[in-house]
Length: 173
Image (tube, rainbow, N blue to C red):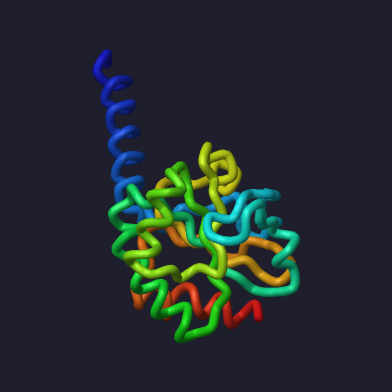
């Protein structure tokens, strides 16, 4: 009898662990889905001195926000894909350079190519936290009303672009 309670606790934990392991970690729900994009006013990484970007400036257009950093290996791998795909489909792609050094980020874009209409500097990561960033890279689809419509965790591949991101973009245009 005294083994029943520990056995029940063990079995309960085993079931919960088993269910958790079956979930796709890339399918984490974002609390931001269908919510307004977090408000930010950040400096632009490359552009005129003092240039800044806010989500309000992008109202009325569908856009993608790719969270990236020069220190992130998957981000480096996805840059050429983002360059090719964003040009092919003519989608407005913006970057959020997360917890990075601007000089290193600029150097990477010069070498790997710059897929972004503009990339903003989130040096302290506060805006990333507002977006609920788990890890970089992450990519968000934002509709013309400024609501987050989709979130992809992990690097963008041609398959992710064509099968996940673009259907959402087309649906909200």
